[in-house]
Amino acid sequence: MKKGLLLLALLGVMYCLSAQDIKLQSPSKSGGKPLMEALNERQSHRTFVKKDLSAQDLSDLLWAANGFNREDKRTVPTSQNKQEMDVYVMLSTGVYLYDAKENILKLIEKGDLRKALGQPAISENASLSLIYVANLDKASNREAGFIDSGFIAQNVYLYCASTGLGSVVRASFTRPGLHEVLKLTEKQEITIVQAVGHIK
Ligand SMILES: Cc1cc2nc3c(=O)[nH]c(=O)nc-3n(C[C@H](O)[C@H](O)[C@H](O)COP(=O)(O)O)c2cc1C
Figure 1 (cartoon, rainbow, N blue to C red):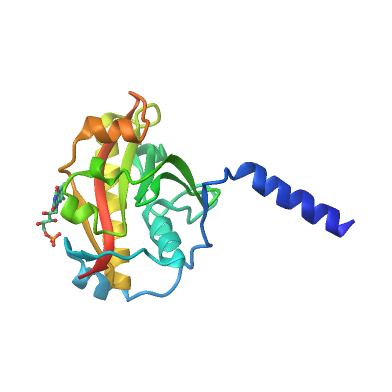
Figure 2 (figure 1 turned 135 degrees about the vertical axis):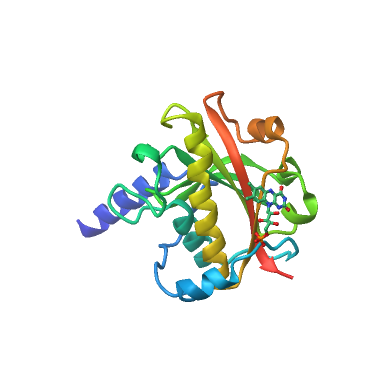
């Protein structure tokens, strides 16, 4: 009986996860440098050693960026609690959408699509780039998405400072090209991009 239930649960998980989604580890929510040290070390880095983040760092980074720290609220505030921001993750293997509730990266498109990010010296050496996208159907207004992205970006800067990773937020990318690569609708708007990697 127990075995049968286990098998059913396993089949359920396999059904929900498409073959190429990435199941994230549980975020650790502890450790790192004290806040004042992280603030003191926060800065933009643009030169990276080509190396992936560890699975734990990837999960922790995304949780810091836009994860849930309460049942239905997140590590970042949003105007009128609209929670209109989505975080897309560009890896060398493809582009993914961070699903914070399920703690998975949902595959949007497979392949090395990093050219669409611009500034190749940064984006093709970084471990990944985060792309912040406002859902205009949810947002209280268009400006809110840009403001709310700032909180995500600063959380990511501080997470990186606290763990010895490097990061830079970037507005210089070609909006229509990246919009297409992410398969966004006209009701979704890219606000800013942020590279994260191992400092050279
Ligand atoms: C809205 C915004 C857009 C930015 N765009 C870029 C960019 O496209 N490329 C880049 O290399 N840095 C970019 N930066 C990073 C700034 O150049 C950097 O924050 C600034 O020089 C201060 O350095 P610091 O972050 O080390 O304090 C951007 C920063 C902000 C806030």
